[in-house]
Each structure stands twice: as C-alpha cells, then as structure tokens.
Amino acid sequence: MAKGNRNREALAIETSPDELDRIQNGQERELAIGALDRNATRMREVQAALRRMDAGAYGICTSCEEEISLKRLAAVPWASSCIVCQEAADLEQGTPWSESEPLSLAA
Image (tube, rainbow, N blue to C red; front, side, top):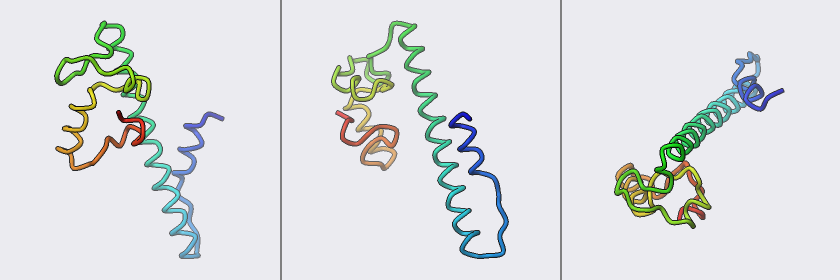
C-alpha cells in the first residue's frame, strides 16, 4: 500500500462512545492532515526546482537573482531563495526559519 494511502486512511472519521477515543482519533486525524499538507507542499517545491533546472535557472535566487550557495543547495535542494532572501521572507511571515526547511540545514 502506498504511503499516501495510509495517510489518507488516518483521516477516516471513527465514531466511539468513549470521549478519550474521540479526542485521540481527532488528534490523529489532525496529524495526518498536517503530514499530507507538508508532503504536498514539499512535492510542489521539488517540482518547481525541477522546472528551474529545465529552464537553466536552478541555483539562482528567485528574489535577488544572485547564486544560491552550494552549501544551501546541498542541504535544501529545492531552495528557490538564497539564505538572505529566505531569512527576510521568514521575518516578514513572522517565522524565525522556513517551516519547509530543516532548521540546522538552512545555511
């Protein structure tokens, strides 16, 4: 069975007379929805990186058009922004780092 199908199965609404079971089922459903959302976002980022490769623009920041460091691309191959532009975007969004990138590998 594909991993995506297992995640979707976790979304199934189960009924239970027990309040704790309903709470646990709801939390599991929320976790599954979050995982599906993260996976879909990552898939879009990877597909965009592949399109940039085809266009010859991979490794170029989409904001400032400067080269993205090899260290950053090694850590986050789907990165579309250099670290400076990504940090600025994260500050603008109110997050200290990009949620789509590993914290320790953002540089």
